[in-house]
Length: 261
Image 1: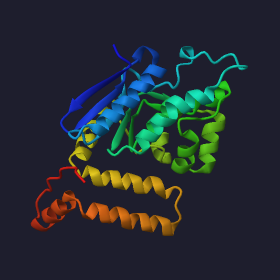
Image 2 (image 1 turned 90 degrees about the vertical axis):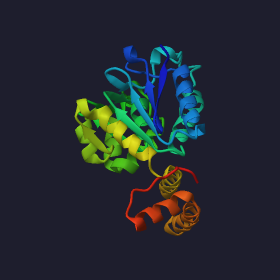
Image 3 (image 1 turned 120 degrees about the vertical axis):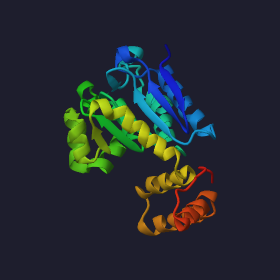
């Protein structure tokens, strides 16, 4: 059994965190394998979307503390762990050229929660839950948590989630806008795969441009963002998928996108 499994579907890949006996708690080899899986998906011209989920009864319980020797506070450097393993992965997912869907099938705790929040569209089973567990062990939210939380749920809720380290249900997460949707447990993977398959049939190169614009909007002022929209729209307008989409609209038929720039 490997820490990560990858299954190929028509037009997309399913990447599964695969340490179910440890609630998919992360280790260095697992994080490196996950990064490689996302890189490989980006390099595969036949892959046009990615679905991330977890094996067993949990999505990801965060960092496996038993797998790191950091209890000697005189020598421990958790910043190095974050810099080497988590930061490149979160940036890769955020900047990934393909749409990334996440199906949270159980507990998403600590870095596991923030791994899910780095994805573009997050669905969670009714039985799933989210917790920024860091403060419980004297740490701060990492893996992009302090960046994502205020943008998703606002400052007041972000502060409470981070400082209190209280668990919230999938239903509450959806109501607050932390995730896209809560679905019944039995329907989670079918709905997640349906969304991923739909995205894989869309103009995925243009979806990548949309992701770039949305990510930049967090830092840009209006004038800068308008200029970026102009530039990206110019790029999108020169793609074969725009020509196909416009023709299909005028001819009143479904478009046949290729996902190419």
